[in-house]
Length: 447
Image (cartoon, rainbow, N blue to C red; front, side, top):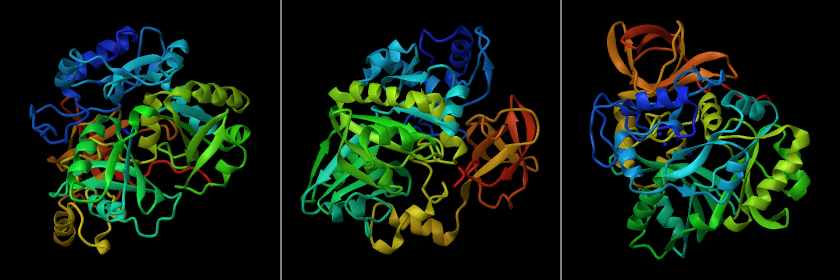
């Protein structure tokens, strides 16, 4: 998930701004990757999507990655003129650090500070800190919360204890994906859903509609909540200096409340969207700058680097994690995305169950695969994929993977494409460029 789902800020270097603006018409992060893909709002204009594309040399001489976060659809740009993007509680910190700020999902957010490559390596080797306060937090509570969410989510809540976190898609009746979320359990009568920023309003409406006949309340905690993600092998050491031993005792996908950090009461979880160990620190919005500064100060000796959305995307890509609007969408089901383990048919009825069951029983017609370029070229989202000269699908995400040192991608293709190692071709600038299917994730951290 997570967010992640645009034209470079006017302050961006000219080389990158020109590239992004020239591609904006074909790069729409919320499209569903068909040749004439339907938008979630019903708009169809036949333009393919785009994600991280290629290394571009700007006039500064730095190597930058034009990426999803820098690209806006024409529709989104028209709407952006009517509504000023929101600012997270940490906006001024990003400005002070001379970060490159972009409009992402209606928020002014840093896409990079010193460079995407350097920030990517910092997270893999030391630690990186991300402002993800744009994410949505939706609280559901009441005597029927458990039963209500069991019908809303594809994954089951059975077996969760207080303090557990669980990943789950949310589906439409036709099996398409509304969003993918993290579910925090406080009790059987109170849960928290952390949702993708660009989907928050849609999710809130969908949850309330589905909870209308349940004895629950649905509250939007987003505006009052700031979230900072601390990721990387040094994350444990950094957070332990400020919050004591409690965070280090958390297991993977667990959380704890009432942890004092820099004099602020926080909720800390241990999940992540980078492929590295790390923590999410939730705090009152008004205390965000205090927590940010304290983490930065404590992390200096550990090599901590503030990191932007650009490397967050390259990191999740290497780890094979889905991005909503690319590997998941209203047109792509969790089963097609390879997320069958998060679909619990055994629990009984839930939204989309009948459609997903039919997909499973009849056999998938499409699936997400990983691939590696065999010839020079970087695959971008929306590029056609063929096998033996016949179109079989399209790229959902693609970039140069810094840790692996290869041009890699993910694609939605016909399910019978063949075993790993099957040769395919990606159409790049009207030329078929050789590639082959490979396993995902592309990167796994060492134990």
